Image (cartoon, rainbow, N blue to C red; front, side, top):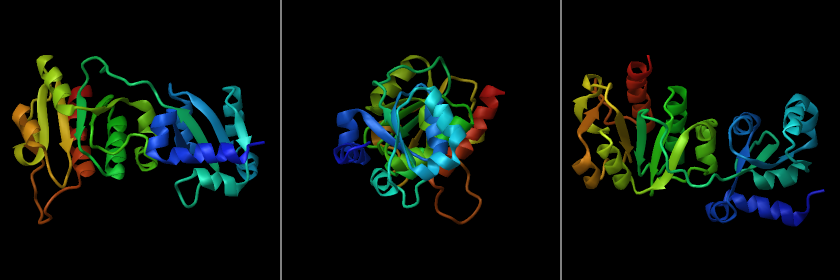
Length: 255
C-alpha cells in the first residue's frame, strides 16, 4: 500500500529542485524505463497500474527478477507522478549518478553550450547514441539533463551515454585542447563541415541556436564549421544540424 505522503514525495520529483535535493528522478513509459533498467543507473522503485500489470506481465516479470520494488497504484495517483497527458501507466524512480568527470578514451566529444530547449537537448543526445558517440559535455545554462522532456526526447540515450553535465564549458574545452583535441564549433559561418579532417581527436560544440556561440568559445576554438545552405530558409534547428554533422564524422571515425 502506497500512502498519500509517499505519492506526494515522489510527485515532487517532477520539479528540478527536488530532483537535485533528493538525488532521484522520474522516468515514464515502458521503453524509456527498459533503457534505464538495462543501464548502470540504479532503479529505486516502480509504480504501475493494475491494467498495466495485466497487459505487460512479461515486462513485470523482468523487473521482478531484478528485485526492484513494484507498487500497484490507482491511475489517479499515477497521474500525479506523470508529466505527460496520456501516460503508459508505468513510472520508475531512478537514483541520480554521482558527478561524472571522466571521458571515455579518446573518442570524439560532443559539447553543448547553452542548449536551453529540452527537446533539442534530448534529440541531440539521441543522435549521439545512434551514431556511437559516447562522450558529451553539457554546459551550465543548458536544460537540465533529467528534465522529463529531455528524457523523453532522448529516448533513453541519457542512460547510455557518458555525460558530464553542468560544467563550465570553456574550462573543459581548454583541458581537451591541452590533450591535443581539435576544437570545432558549428555555426552559421565557417568551413564546410565535409572539408574537416575528422581523423584528429575532435571536440565539436553545438550552441544555443538563438544566440550562437559565445565570444569566449569563439576565442578558444580552432575552427568554425557550417552546413552550406542550398535553399532560402534562414537557419537549421540545432538538433537537425547536429544530426547532419555527427553523421558525417561518425561514419569517417568509426568505419
